[in-house]
Amino acid sequence: MAEFDDGGSVKMMPQKTHKLSEYALIVGEQVIADLHTIAANIEQKSVVHVNSTKTGGGVAEILFRLTPLMSELGLNASWDVIRGDQSFFEATKTFHNALQTGMKITKQKNFEDFERKTAENLRDLRVDADTVFIHDPQPAGMIAQRKLDSDQKWIWRCHIDVSNPASDVWSFFARYINKYDASIFSAPQFGRSDLQIPQFLVSPSIDPLADKNRELPQSYIDRVLSKYALKAEKPLITQISRFDYAKDPIGVIEAFKIVSSHIESELVLGGSLADDDPEGLEVHAKVLKAAEGRKDIHVLLIPPFSDLEINALQRASTIVLQKSVKEGFGLTVAEALWKSKPVIAGATGGIPLQIKNGLSGYLVHTVEGAAYRMHYLLRNPDVAEKLGRYGRANVRQNFLITRQLMDYLLLMISLRRKELVPILAPPRVP
Image (cartoon, rainbow, N blue to C red; front, side, top):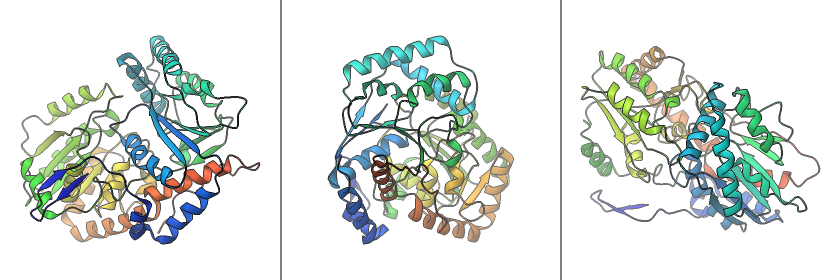
């Protein structure tokens, strides 16, 4: 959290969450009233979320904001994190890649390391609530703590694309997942026909009041540009994401080199390294190598909790990229759209739910396609402005945290009814 003086100087404060009433100016009073009404009808009040890291990536960001809002609605909500070591996170990163790409890249040791650390977490971390949300594959084995003689409901919340996984890894995890009461996926195509439990669709969300998305004074934006030696008079193209092969940062550099040979501009590749992603340093080193000798390419290793600087870089951008070749959802797209920026992104994962091609941005499949769209928007700023305006409206309708909170509350009620409606409606077009 930060406070600004009149000159744009910033005083850093501890990270802050917000009251539901503060969202009323954005989403309307009726939405807030509906949340209170739904929560009042939940009799089983204790809720716990479990994931693998407190920092880095969209899951941790969502849980940091979502858990206090659940508490404000009268639920006894908490957030726990499993513990891992290097071999465990190397194994889960391999699983992550195998589940999203379908490649058979895992070794027997990966499964053994996962089971070893899961056993330790089962011993050391007590997960006990009426409703338990387990986020992603890393803590999936915690289902062994489920009390079979109770009315507990365990939900596996999957944030990645498992539509075409490596069969050995999926078979390994399906043994755990089929013991849950329900699963949640971020996009319709991520669902699995071979799961024996109900499947729900809940798209992730952004917090419009968080430092990463709130309005900023222009003086602060200018200070950030100056800090990183970025020239405000040149068009700025930015991609903010983890240093991850799936985000295709090398492809971003290749596309930019095509565009910059015709239009003088600057590229920012900014990202952080997450605790549960040991591959990040390797990717970061390769990105630096690809950008070597180019003063118009800025590779920024941004530490966790640098949300204001990320916000400023996105707001200063002429175009925002998210050229993923594989993606779970890609919340950086929603973040940029909320700032009324035109976004060019890979047509993968949950990104097509956020971008209506040609209306709020462009979906691309290749380096050449990304370069073509960048060139077109730099030459046609009126089109870029229209795309950004529509994109913000789409995020307001579908991808703010109050909508995700409502989906979770409705799911909690649904799981205790005799008749389930397994799939929630996909996002609406405003």
